[in-house]
Structure formats: C-alpha cells, structure tokens
Image 1 (cartoon, rainbow, N blue to C red):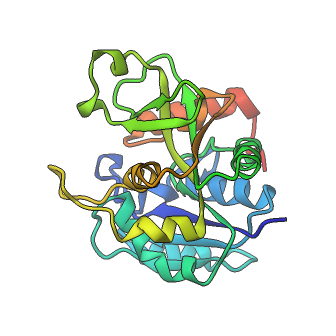
Image 2: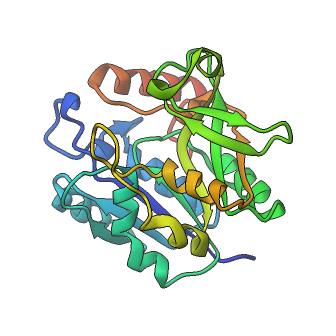
Length: 252
C-alpha cells in the first residue's frame, strides 16, 4: 500500500466558543473533536499523524500525552491561514513520501469511510490532489467546487469571489484534502498571502497544481455532515444533537 500520513490543523483559538481551551478540544458526545478526527484516521490505517498546534498549545500537548500511541506535533506561533499551518509541518512532510491527508481538527464527522473512499479515487486517478467535497442545502460561506466537463476540478472559488452562477453551486469544499506529498511540497512555498486577510490559504496549493496541469480531482462525500464544524457553543450543541441521532453514542 502507498505510504500515507496525515496533518491535522488544530491551532485555532475559537474565540466565540467561550472556552479556555483550544477549539478542537471541545467535546462531541464526551470526546474532543480532535479525537474524533484522530480515530477516523487510525481506523483508515493512517497512523502517521502530525498535529499543528497553536492557541494554548500546552493543552494539546497534555491531551496527546494521554494517548497510548505516538503523534507528532508542530507549533504555529502565528495563525496566518491554513496554508501557513501546513508550512509548519514542512519538515514532517519532507521526511515522508506517498500521500498526505490534511484535515481540520474541528470536523468530527469526517469519517473513516469518506477518508478511505477519497483516497481510493485519489490513488486510482494518480492525482496530485483530491479535495473532499460535499453537497449541502445551504452553501453560503463555503468555497464552491467548480468542475470541468470531464469532472476534474477546475477551481475552488471562495464565496466572496464567486459570481452568480458559481454561488448557485451546492458542492462545497470540506477543507479536507489528499495530496501527493512531493507535489504538495513543490508548490507549498509558492502560496502567497495576497488577500485582504494577509493569510496563506491551502486551496491555493490546489490552484497552483492545476496551473501546472497536474491531475486534480474532487471526491464527493456521501454525507453533507462531513463539512460541519463548530465556531460557537450553539453550533457545538448542534453537532452533539446530530451525533446523537447518527450514532447514539461515540462511534469509535
């Protein structure tokens, strides 16, 4: 099997969460959202994991220290976007080959089945990158997936940059990506912070690979829940309600 590893983005503060701990340690069905993501990866046989920590990094370190297996961590001292977070894991990636899945530590419903099926497509098509997408009833706020006639990814268009036709697209970016490690490293340092927020965005790595005429695809998850996260206590409560209906109890 192709060598596979994972980078989990877990540096967020989550100011609106009204909590004294990193957002990814907020719990769904009694387990930190970060643990949901770790367990989904390990069930998918992706056990070589690096967590990008940031806000209150000592809380992440303390939690990881309680686990019966080893997980690497790196520190993002400034939160300058998802692309910047992955740059912090550059050394981790340089020591590995094969493919890497990059995903958010506050997306508890990105399950092992979705991870495995997305990788199967990524591997079968020999893609440089594969974004995991989902079709949602209300795509407002999400980056839209724009495909070519052959189904390959043409672009990920952010809400603020989308024209009327693109805004009508209901297939959205989950924030989770499979990359060929070497192809990702070939464009990672070329990501620019030339936007209003002055941040480095990971979808720009996808755009750069498309511009290099690499094969880039999108795998549509079977459940729209895969894109869900929580930015405040109300959204966290909603995740708990959904999880209770879906699983009845913590599924792993």
